[in-house]
Length: 555
Image 1: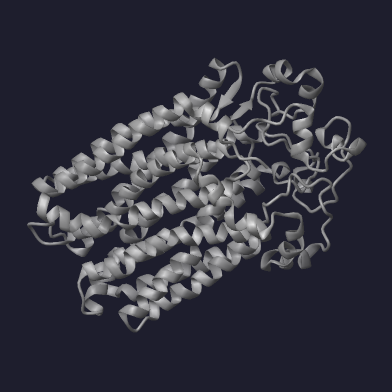
Image 2: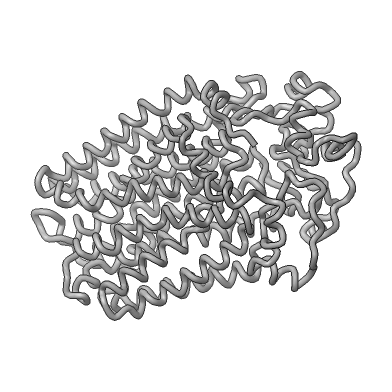
C-alpha cells in the first residue's frame, strides 16, 4: 500500500502543509473543539478521556466499525482515518498544518532518512576502533585486550548514560537542538580521536564521543511516532533500527581494508567526514518534530522564516517552549518511572541480553578471526574486514523481511480481535527470531572451536544478526504501544540495556573461550537468551493486558 494513501493531510496542498502556518480554529467536526469549552480541560488528552475515546495504553481501536460500537456514532464520526477509511489514525492528527502528522510523505521520509543517518553515527564511530584494533595496539605499544578494555568497552558503556542525558534535555528543550549540539560536540571529540598523541587521550576522546553522539538513537522512536500513524510505525521503526544495528559492522568492513596501508588515523578522518555530513544535513534539512499535541491552543510561533529556523536549531525556541512542558524533576526522573514497571523491566532485560550478546560478537570476532591458532583463524587484516560483510547483509535481509512481517502479523491479529490492536501482538515476531538466534550462536561457536570453514562463520553470524534485528524491532514496538506518551524514555532504556548488556561481554568472552572453548561460550549465551525468552515473551502475552492495566503510566 502506498504511504500517501495511509494518512490524511488536513491541508489541501502538500507543499502548503510543509510551510509554517497559523493554526486554524478547531471545528465542530473534530475533538479539539471541546478543549477549553464550557469550563472543560485545556489538555487534549483530558478532553479525549472525558469524551470517552482516549485509547488505553497498549490497546487501540483500529477498525472504524468497532469504534462506532465502543465510542458511539457521534465520537466515532469525528475520528480521522486513512484515505480508504479502513484504519483509524493514532495519534489523531490535529487541524494544524504544522503538526508533523500532516506533513507531506516526502518531508516525513526525509526526516526519517537524516535521523537514520545520525543514528548510524555512534556505533559506526565505535566500530572504527574495532577496525583498527591491531593497528592501534601497534601504535600505542600495547595489546589488543588493553585496547578493548580501555577504549572499546567503555565507549560502548557510555552510549547508555548518554542516551538518558539526551532524553532529559529533549523533554524540556526539544529534539532538534539536542540533536544538533550532540552531533556537533561528538564531531569535535571524534577529531580528537584522530589526532590523539597517546592511548589515554585516545580513550578519553573515544568515550566522550560515544556519550554525546548517542542522542539520535533515543530520538528515533519519538520522531517516528510523531511523523507516522500507528499502522505505519513498525515499518518505519524497522528502517530506523536498521541504521544503528548495521553501523558497527560497516566501519570494520569498509575502513578495515584501508587501515593496513593508510593507518587507523586516516580511517578516523573518514569517520569525521561522515559525521560532518550528518551535521550539515541536520542544519539545513532537519525539522523540529516535537509537537506538543496536548497543549491546545498551541502557542503561536514568536518568529518566522530564517530567524525561526536558527532559533529552533540552537535551542532558543526550546527555551521559550520549556514553560509549556514538563518540569525539570519530571524530565530527570521520568525514565525511572518506566523502569520499575514489571512488563517494562522484563522485556528490557530480555533485550539487554539478546542485543548485548550481539555487541559482544562484534567486539570479539576481530580477535577470533585475526588471532593466530589455536584461538583464532589467523586471518590477515583484509580477511578480518571482509568477514564483516556477513552481518551487514543479514541486517539488510532482516529489514526487508521485518518491513512486511510486522504488518502482516498485526493486520491478521487485529482482524481476529474484532478490529482492536493489543501491544502483545508485537511479540509474536520474537518466536520467529529466536530459532535463528540459537542456531546462529551455536554454529558460530562450533566454527571457532572446530575451525570449520569460513562459510560456517558467515552463516552463523548472519543468522544471529538477522534474529537481533527482528527481536529489537519487536521490543521497540511493544514498549512504544505500552507507553505511548513515553517514547523517549523507552528509547533511552532500551539503548541503556543493550549497551550495558554488551559492555561486559568482551571482558569474559576471550578468556572464557581459551579455557572452555568457543562452543561452550556461544552455546551458553544462546541458552541464556532462550531461557529469558521463555520467561518473558509467553508470560507477557498471557499476563500483559493485566500488567498494562495495573501498571500504566498516569499523566
